[in-house]
Image 1 (cartoon, rainbow, N blue to C red):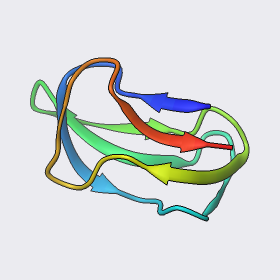
Image 2 (image 1 turned 180 degrees about the vertical axis):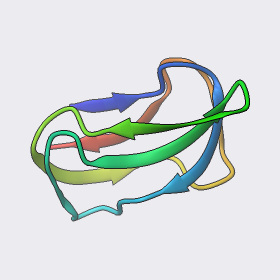
Image 3 (image 1 turned 90 degrees about the vertical axis):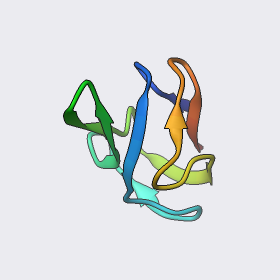
Image 4 (image 1 turned 135 degrees about the vertical axis):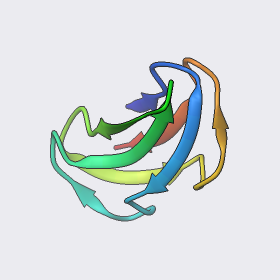
Length: 69
């Protein structure tokens, strides 16, 4: 499953790395959009296969941030 950005913004913090086990609801990223810091939750239990963004990255809406398997 791909975790995608809901809106354009900036990645403030990356809380996971490839290989991490995650549960539904765990916070994967903190994104700043419209001057608000928003947590990006994990949509399902699994393992982080790939993190495609880093802190400081600019995001476009719909951009893939991570892959969970």
